[in-house]
Amino acid sequence: EGEDRALARYEAHGYRLVARNWRVKSGEIDLVVERGDVVVICEVKTRSSVRYGTGFDAVDWRKRRKIRIVASQFLSSTDRHWPDVRFDVAWVSPTGVRVLEGAF
Image 1 (tube, rainbow, N blue to C red):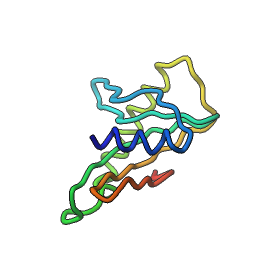
Image 2: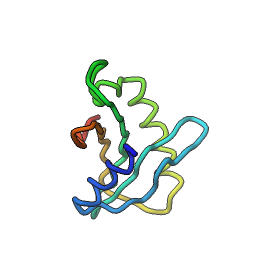
Image 3: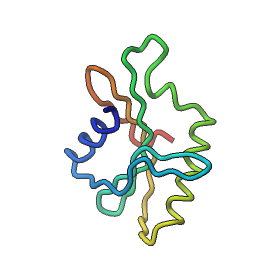
């Protein structure tokens, strides 16, 4: 459900889905969306409360490194080319979806 809500937010802002739950041996990308010349690699974190931190807090340096590695594999696997690549984190909570654009 969290990914559905995050995707709906991107689509409402004019983005188009490129890939969802793209998996390789080294990991997974939750959402890949595009708008114009920009492709966005998005990590979606769903939290029911902030007791253990926000969804943004859950993406530490190890997770960021893994996402970058998998994103590189994704970008190499497609015949598409985007001049700009952005890494976002979407935090989905009961009150809404917040996106930190250019999170890392």
